[in-house]
Length: 213
Image 1 (cartoon, rainbow, N blue to C red):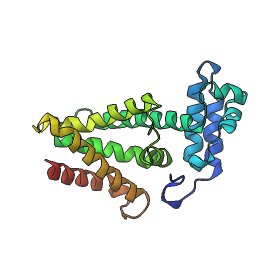
Image 2: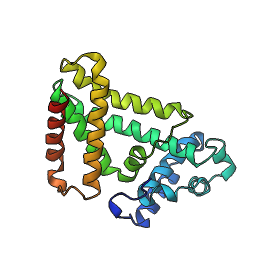
Image 3: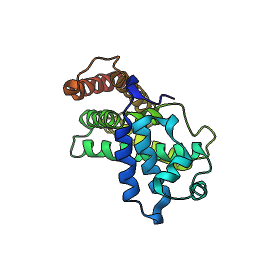
Image 4: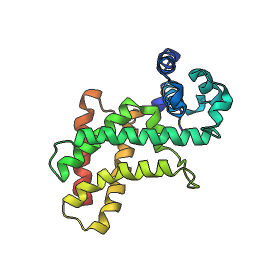
């Protein structure tokens, strides 16, 4: 699992600003949510290896035993962080798809939303796109968030007239390829400027859609 995307570590100044703001607005009635917010802030600053339940307890100003009532170990925390990441991705994709014509235009918009989320949240995206966290099926919320998000990429294939039974595989292949392209851009292996990235992703999505149709 990569902790820092593209080999560029983010300085601790960002971490300090992020998690202290989270702590300032934290309400003890939603400790689990506050812990996830703090974890995401630390994740984006220093990567997954920097996450610690005890450190998050300090961030939120509670005893570490209170943290263990919500998360039994680091894996369960990472699962909840990844689940929140998929929910955020879902919202970003929906925002981009809003008002777009069914079929290819909607899929292109979804692909751009996918890329923009990854660009703005590189370490969270790396966690979500890395080794599967829920191999044992212990985190159904994470699975639901993934399925519901990925279903949005299936809809344009359905609207384009493909047989229903083939659309799930087509959508999975599309997202897998899009994930690869996005990762290569974020890692600097595909040299695409920030200004041109949305157009590049849009063209890649059109090519993928054509090939998968």
